[in-house]
Image (cartoon, rainbow, N blue to C red; front, side, top):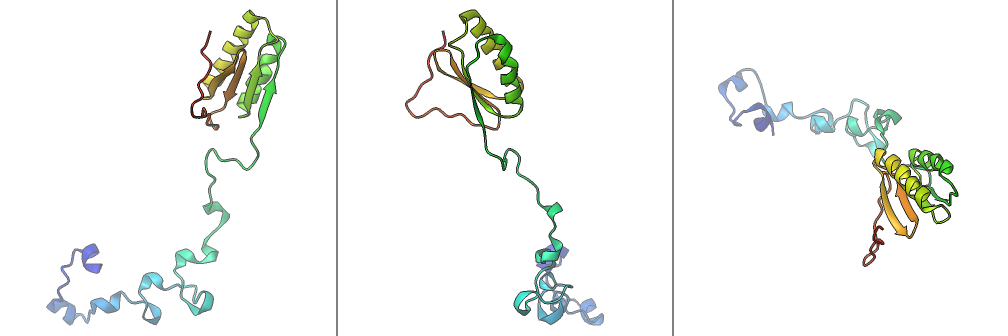
Length: 160
C-alpha cells in the first residue's frame, strides 16, 4: 500500500539503510497493529483498539442528517366536496402543507367546477405536484412528496 501511495517501487535502497528506515516499522502503531487501527482513546470494548472514527465519543447528533422527502408524521388525505369556488383556497393551502386532496366537484355548476379544477391544478403545478382524474367530477391532487401509481390494468377516465 505504501508503494502505491508514495510512488515507491517497494525496493529498499541504500538511503533506507543509512537512515535506519524499516518500511514495515513505519506502518505499525501501538501494540503491533497498523496505525489506522490504533486509537489514542485507548482500548475499546473487550480490550480491542478501535479506530478513532468508530469511537462513540466521536459521533454526535450534528453528524446525523435527515433524509429529504421522508417525514416522521403521518401523511394526510383530505376529501373535499365544495359547493362553490370560494372554498378552493382551502385546497391550495392543503397542497402547500403537502397534503393529498380528493376533490369531488359533482355538487358544483359545470362552469364553476371547471374554474375550480383549473385553479387547483395551477396551484398543484406550481408546487410540482401531480393530479389524476378518478371519475366524473372527482380529482386527486397530490404534492410532489407523494407518488401516485395507477393499478395494473386500470386506466384513468378520458377527460371531457
